[in-house]
Image (tube, rainbow, N blue to C red; front, top):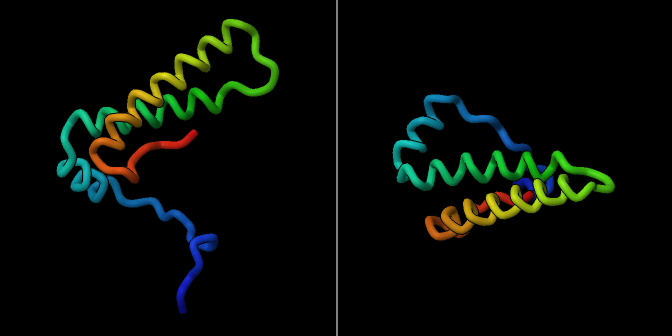
Length: 83
Protein backbone atom coordinates (compact mmCIF):
# COMPACT_ATOMS: atom_id res chain seq x y z
CA UNK A 1 0.00 0.00 0.00
CA UNK A 2 1.38 3.39 -1.00
CA UNK A 3 0.81 6.21 1.44
CA UNK A 4 0.01 9.66 0.12
CA UNK A 5 2.27 12.52 1.31
CA UNK A 6 -0.57 14.08 3.34
CA UNK A 7 -0.72 11.03 5.61
CA UNK A 8 2.99 10.82 6.41
CA UNK A 9 3.87 11.43 10.04
CA UNK A 10 7.35 12.65 11.01
CA UNK A 11 9.10 10.16 13.23
CA UNK A 12 11.83 11.33 15.61
CA UNK A 13 15.23 9.76 15.09
CA UNK A 14 17.49 8.56 17.91
CA UNK A 15 20.25 10.90 19.04
CA UNK A 16 22.94 8.47 17.91
CA UNK A 17 21.54 8.47 14.37
CA UNK A 18 21.33 12.26 14.39
CA UNK A 19 24.96 12.41 15.53
CA UNK A 20 26.03 10.12 12.66
CA UNK A 21 24.15 12.30 10.17
CA UNK A 22 25.68 15.43 11.69
CA UNK A 23 29.17 13.96 11.42
CA UNK A 24 28.73 13.82 7.64
CA UNK A 25 27.89 17.53 7.36
CA UNK A 26 30.36 20.42 7.45
CA UNK A 27 30.39 22.38 10.71
CA UNK A 28 29.13 25.62 9.11
CA UNK A 29 26.09 23.76 7.72
CA UNK A 30 25.28 22.29 11.13
CA UNK A 31 25.58 25.74 12.70
CA UNK A 32 23.32 27.19 10.01
CA UNK A 33 20.74 24.49 10.74
CA UNK A 34 20.72 25.37 14.44
CA UNK A 35 20.56 29.11 13.64
CA UNK A 36 17.67 28.59 11.21
CA UNK A 37 15.71 26.52 13.71
CA UNK A 38 16.19 29.12 16.47
CA UNK A 39 15.29 32.00 14.15
CA UNK A 40 12.15 30.20 12.93
CA UNK A 41 11.02 29.67 16.54
CA UNK A 42 11.69 33.36 17.24
CA UNK A 43 9.60 34.40 14.22
CA UNK A 44 6.66 32.24 15.41
CA UNK A 45 6.83 33.91 18.83
CA UNK A 46 5.47 37.20 17.47
CA UNK A 47 1.69 37.25 16.95
CA UNK A 48 -1.00 39.87 16.63
CA UNK A 49 -0.48 43.60 16.46
CA UNK A 50 3.17 44.33 17.05
CA UNK A 51 4.73 47.41 18.60
CA UNK A 52 7.73 48.98 16.87
CA UNK A 53 10.23 47.09 19.05
CA UNK A 54 8.54 43.72 18.36
CA UNK A 55 8.48 44.45 14.62
CA UNK A 56 12.20 45.19 14.73
CA UNK A 57 12.88 41.96 16.66
CA UNK A 58 10.78 39.97 14.19
CA UNK A 59 12.64 41.52 11.24
CA UNK A 60 15.95 40.66 12.92
CA UNK A 61 14.81 37.03 13.34
CA UNK A 62 13.68 36.91 9.70
CA UNK A 63 17.06 38.23 8.58
CA UNK A 64 18.86 35.59 10.67
CA UNK A 65 16.62 32.92 9.16
CA UNK A 66 17.37 34.16 5.64
CA UNK A 67 21.14 34.11 6.29
CA UNK A 68 21.01 30.57 7.66
CA UNK A 69 18.74 29.37 4.85
CA UNK A 70 21.16 30.77 2.28
CA UNK A 71 23.92 28.55 3.67
CA UNK A 72 21.60 25.54 3.90
CA UNK A 73 20.29 25.98 0.35
CA UNK A 74 23.83 26.26 -0.98
CA UNK A 75 24.65 22.90 0.61
CA UNK A 76 21.42 21.18 -0.47
CA UNK A 77 18.23 22.68 -2.03
CA UNK A 78 15.87 20.82 0.35
CA UNK A 79 17.53 21.89 3.62
CA UNK A 80 16.15 25.45 4.14
CA UNK A 81 13.81 25.93 7.10
CA UNK A 82 10.45 27.62 6.48
CA UNK A 83 8.75 29.70 9.16
